[in-house]
Length: 329
Image (cartoon, rainbow, N blue to C red; front, top):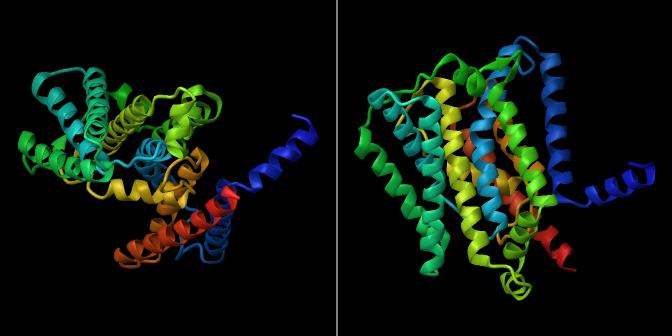
């Protein structure tokens, strides 16, 4: 890339919401690092164990947020990703424990089932012209209940073989393999959204459905694909989380759908669709866990996280509305 091309790219990047969230994220990291250097014994932000735990925790939310983000860009929502993630993980664990199915096959079945759940949400939403918010709210409750129906309220073990454990739950130094999977997914989704026809169609459908239809794009097909992607990523996140802790709690997926939407909104995605980027989604998820980590290190009560994340969401929506108004001009 020539210097003039890079300068042009940098100028264009500074105008995006990704640049804004990146600036906020870097500023917060600078403050945290400075505090850790000033008080290394009381604020262990830079300690190896803390960094390792952070890099293991972010993918559980980040991977779900990628799927939710693609769906939001297409103009829809999915509130069932958290409980669906838990349900398909429980199904995979039951296949392994009760039917002696290989963990690789069980995980593939779980991801396929998650994809079908996402597609079902899309079919109901589009076939009956219902708001996806309502359809997937029903799905949230349905799959939560199904998890307890098929297994009960007890945790279930998820103990794969050493190869699977390393590939999806191991570490390379301080960096977890799950974090590397998140980075790989981010790169893949960025390429899809920015350099592939499907990505262009997702943006077009979310930005202006009538205009997309006029140029030959099928909104129904594109939205079904986006719903399916959201379901598949939720299932993948469930497998990653189960591998990390080697067990599944039937209630563990509750709330992650709201955090995923929060990560997307904080990352600059428009609530009405048609605008957003993968870098923003990644930084939104990382920022939520950074705040959580800081509060834990400061021994603050757990409800402080809700206060900070809630305030961030409102501020992000206000900023996105202002940015959207400027964009439309």
